[in-house]
Length: 318
Image 1 (cartoon, rainbow, N blue to C red):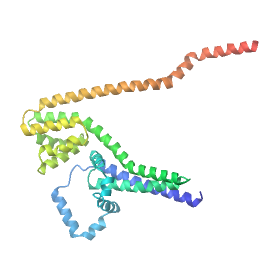
Image 2 (image 1 turned 60 degrees about the horizontal axis):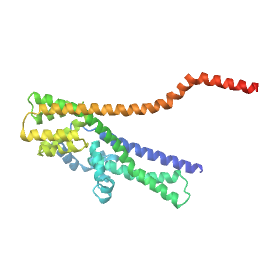
Image 3 (image 1 turned 60 degrees about the vertical axis):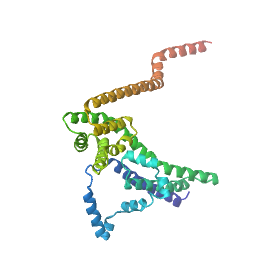
Image 4 (image 1 turned 120 degrees about the horizontal axis):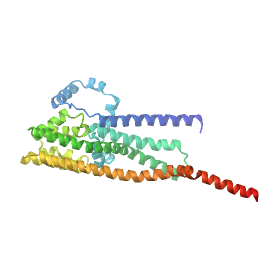
C-alpha cells in the first residue's frame, strides 16, 4: 500500500471510532442517567406551545444529534425499522431503561451506521483475493454491525438485572416497615419512589414509571405489569402479584412480606454456596497448573540434581 491508502485507512478508522464513541456514549448515558424528577404534563404542553410559536428559534436550538434522532424516528415504525429494532430489541431496551423514542432512534442509527461502516472498513483493511473473500468481508461486516449494539445493550441489561435482584430484599423490607406504621400500598410505594431512590436505583426507576401509570388512570395490575415482566425475574412477579392482591382484597401484608424476604435471603445463600463450590473447583485447576510445578521443583529438585550428578559420574567413569 502507498501513503494515500494508509492515510485513507487511518481516516476511516478514526471516523468509525468517533461514531462508535458518540453512539455508545449516548446510549449508555441514556441508560444510566434517567431523570429522577420527570417533567409534568403541563410543562410539556408549555414547551410544545413555545416550540410551535417560535419554530425558527427551536430549529436553531436543535443540535445535530437531535436532528439525527428526529430523522431516524421517522424510520422506526417502517418495515425496515421494525426489522432493525424488533420486539426482542425493544424488550432489551426496556431492561436498559431506554425504550423511548430517543433510545430506539439511537439504537436504529447505531445499527445502520455500523452495518455500513464495518464492511467498508473491512474492504479497506483486508486484501480482496476474489469474490469469495469479498463476500466474506461484507457478510461478517454486516453481521458484526448488526449485532454489536445488541451485545452492548445486553451487557447493560444483565448488569441492571443483577442490580434489581440485589435491591429486591431491601425493597421488601422497606415495604414491611412502611406497612407496619400504617401506610397504604400506594403511600408506601410513593415514599419508596421519592425517599429511597438513591439506594434503589433500578427498582426505584421502575416504581416511578409504575406510579406515573397508576396516576394517569390505569389499574394497579396494569401499572405493575411492566415492573413484573421487564427483568424476567420470578421474585419481582411474585411481589407484584402480592401488591395487586392487597390492593384488590386488602388485608395485612407484613407477614407475607416477611416470609417472602426470608425465602429470598435463603435462596441467595444457596446461590452463594453454589458459586463458592464452582469457584473451588476452578481454583483446583489453577493450583494444579501454577503451584504444582513449583512444588515439584522445590521438593524434588535436589533429588533430581543428585540423580543427574550420579549418572554423569557413572558416564565419566565408563
